[in-house]
Length: 154
Image (tube, rainbow, N blue to C red; front, side, top):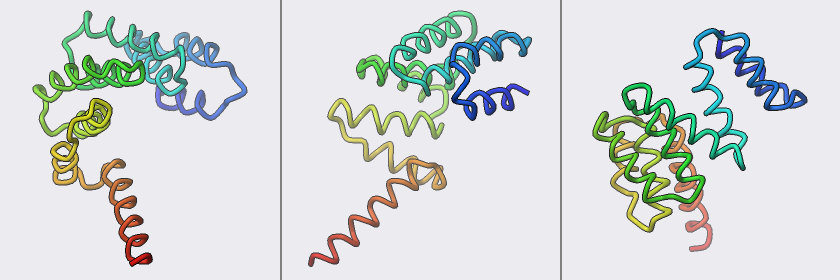
């Protein structure tokens, strides 16, 4: 049910975001799921909503055991806010929980690029363990396009 509500909220851009979240909050009884959905919706909206998303993830991490999902959510917020060192720390914590989590690896790739570190290790791990991940597919597509461009010039 939560998925259907979120899908309806995303597909109805004429409904204000705050009204969408209120609708979800009134309909879904499990407040934790509503908070989590609100955090991800705030991330999708971006801008000033990133800080709100971070605070929701922070609140969830204080109430419940820190999961990879919560840690990745906080890390993504940090990346959006330009706090790359904090994001890296959160991703290391998430990696300690599950070294092969595809979202953690993908977020490490992005974070590493922002702080000037090599991302090849994380991208290689992601390619090996999750070849169908969106980042792997997009990276492979870009690499193939680049190779075709090089071949056409040579």
